[in-house]
Each structure stands twice: as C-alpha cells, then as structure tokens.
Image (tube, rainbow, N blue to C red; front, side):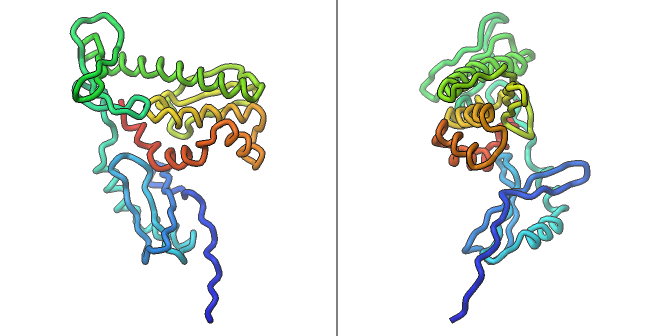
Length: 244
C-alpha cells in the first residue's frame, strides 16, 4: 500500500506585482483539479488561482509569475467601474436598484418600488447625480454602521472613540490604538450580514488588538456569520469597488 503525505496548507492568497500595481491572487485548492488554472472574474473580484490536490505554494507562485502578460491583458479587458448614471444598476444592502435621474433640482434621494424592482430616484439632474448618490450612500452607510457598532459595543461593554467613513481598497475596516473605528462606506452596498460582520470585527479589536484565537472567538460570538462573511468578502468584495 502506498502512503501519501498530506499537502501543505495554502495561504488564502498571494501577492503579485504587475508593473507599478500590486495585485492579490486568491488561492483555492481543488482535489479534482489536474492542473493549475488562473481566472479573472468578470464581476471584478480578485483573480483566482486553482491549485491541484498535490500542488505547492512555490509552484503556484511560479505559475502566476509566468501568467503575468495574460493576467495584465485580462484585467485591461475588464471594466474598471460601473458609473452612477441614469439606467445603471447598483446594489443597496445587497439588493439591485436601478438608478433614475429625477426631475427637479431639489429634494432627497428616495427609493421607489416598481413592478420591475426598486428604483433609486436621484434629484438634481444627470450632471449632479454621481455626487448626490455617493453622498447619500455614505449617509446610509453611516446610519447602518453606527447602529451595528453600538449594538456590538454594548454587548462587549466597550465604547469606540469615534467612527470614520472612508473609501479604501486595502481594508474594509480598521481600529486604531486609541479606539477610533474606520470603515469603507461601500459596505452598505453589500448584504447587511457583511456590514454587520465588519462592524463586529472592528469592535472586537477594542478588546483584542490582534488576530489571535481569543479575538476570533470573540468576533464569532458577536457575529456568528463571521466565517461566511469572510468568504463573501474574499470572493465578492472586490465587486463593491466597481460602482461609482
């Protein structure tokens, strides 16, 4: 009988440099795969490298390096953004909404329910639509995040020093040594359970400023959907940066 040593565990991703650009390539081991396969999701997520059952991190890195030119070409083909414009679709709390330029220059963004689905009606005309809609999204994100942070902070018995909204690509949230929490406003585009997880993650840092076992235990106590939300962010989080 032949015995095979178990394959070494892989990290979630590897970093690849394309010119001046730093790129994250997600690694997924597939026991049925016969070869290394690199793909670029059309939705805008990070490139994914499928690794065979006996594949190694070193071989995966070498394969990705050999695919630099192909990867650059595929990323060039993919649309970088989905602009805020009349008739475009954008998610709000995980639900697709059609953008409508409303008549008149005054008023607030509002949601209209139609037979075809929800519509985001934005006053002010097409020229002002992107800024007004972005500001409205930021306001909705602040409302949702402040509520989620307050709930988790109360459960933990800690209070943050403050909450800031940003538009960062490198992280969805952060907690400073002084207890200031920062979040990406784009979390309001994701399903509510994703925003809730990120809020719980950063609140947990108020007690555990690390990513050790105690931190993850605390995070899962606050947000039982932690593992599922982390997978969602790895696989689909990149798409949130396409909008606007």
